[in-house]
Length: 127
Image: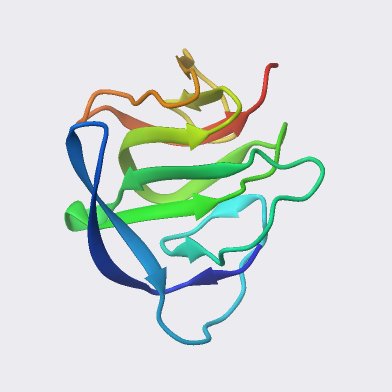
């Protein structure tokens, strides 16, 4: 998965305003198992991916998203994260601790966590 520094653009989704990050030139890459502060490059979904996007709010209220995240893998956030929104076709589960530990919060497709609900990791698909 390739991540980029964000350039912000506001988009209204399901009655609430979310801001998405879009690629702003070439940047370094990050491992797919760690969602870093940035966004995934847009592309087509491959086998084993949760088609769609997953958005969250990072440090200082900065919005981020990843498109077509991997199915069944635990993604650990490298910075504070809150307000998860599952825009994928698969259920997402957010966890309060890294490495998908702690009491999970299940987010069906199209649903979101409370705005200020923090999370440290996420997994997609039915587990």
